[in-house]
Image (cartoon, rainbow, N blue to C red; front, side, top):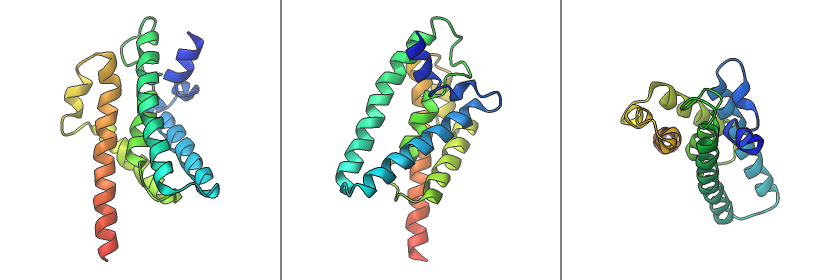
Length: 159
């Protein structure tokens, strides 16, 4: 159970006493940023980096689901300590962004806004109360944040 709690709490960040979801999102952002930064310094091409990131997201969705399922045996549904879903969501929001700290910061901010306010179907998924819904409301928040960022990048490039 210790392993599953470690995953569900994103290496313990879910135990942060104030805003554990934001703490988990920050941990996820930092992990992905430094992974991609290290891959860039290792001269790994863009396509392999995208593939590694995509595989990491998919792997974490399934590991996160399994961990959530296990901790739900002893914790309430979508307990505040469960933040692996925030890690997954912010990774999706950051997917394919240029490896610059401010892009990852924007991904974090937009993801948290969508995750907190839950517009456009996110709240509907959140209310389903299943192990999958714990993850997929954040997946959708990450998709919305990513779309918002890419629209912003497109219009910024026109200026």
